[in-house]
Amino acid sequence: MRVVLCGILCCMTACQGGEKQIASSSTDIVDLAHKSKARFEIIYREANAPEVNTSVISSEALSGEAEQQQIIAAVNTIIHALPQVQDVASEWLGVLKWLSILAGIVGVSVLIWQTGAGVAIKRGILWITKPKVAS
View 1 (cartoon, rainbow, N blue to C red):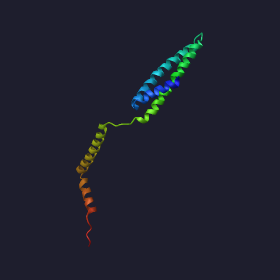
View 2 (view 1 turned 180 degrees about the vertical axis):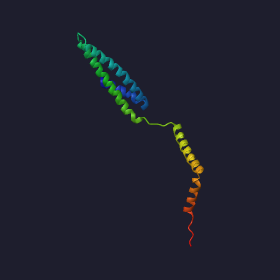
View 3 (view 1 turned 135 degrees about the vertical axis):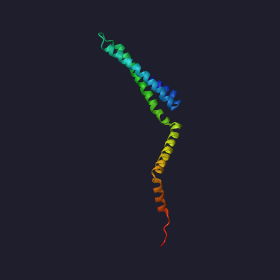
View 4 (view 1 turned 90 degrees about the vertical axis):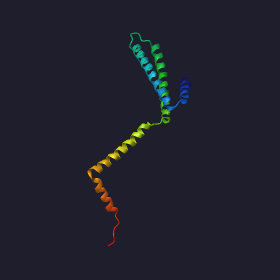
């Protein structure tokens, strides 16, 4: 029965995109974890009761085991969906990157111009590229 439920869950999520599979499975995991927590609280109360009701403990334990199987199936769905998810940067981040590079180039150019280092660099380049005159 569990295998059939896991198979149905996988078939249902396989038709969705990676992001939707991950979101759906994450929500399922949270819901199942809350249910398991409540079951563990019931088991704890029953185990510490003056008159232990083993049938309630057994029932809750079996149901908890089924929930854990569902959690494992949901985690497996997330693991299989991760390769389908692509890290996509926003377009404005690319524009911002190029604007910051441009601002850096302009800033360095202005700094070179204002300090007078531009003239020294120009003279050095002309001195290196000047053809040698044969004597």
